[in-house]
Length: 113
Image (cartoon, rainbow, N blue to C red; front, side, top):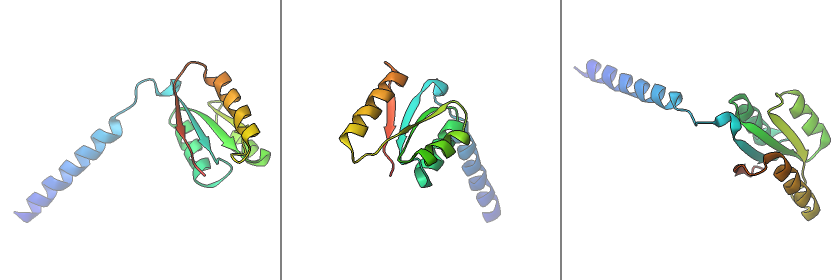
């Protein structure tokens, strides 16, 4: 009896997990996301994973070395820019660069780092 109950619960769990993984966002390949702190660590990993899932990623790096490495590891859907979040001038330049790339489309912003 308990074994059957455990099997049914495990089956329901797996069915729910399968259903959640099958859900997709419409027009995912046309969406942009801006991620800061992409030189290494979590920002870098997030940028590569979202690019692999089909999003267009605008990855902000602090150093040219980090930007070059990230660009080499991804497809043309991932574009990099240099951004120092402590500099107002750098932020303004990055905002103009992003506006140029995105245009009138909605930008999903995730600040990391």
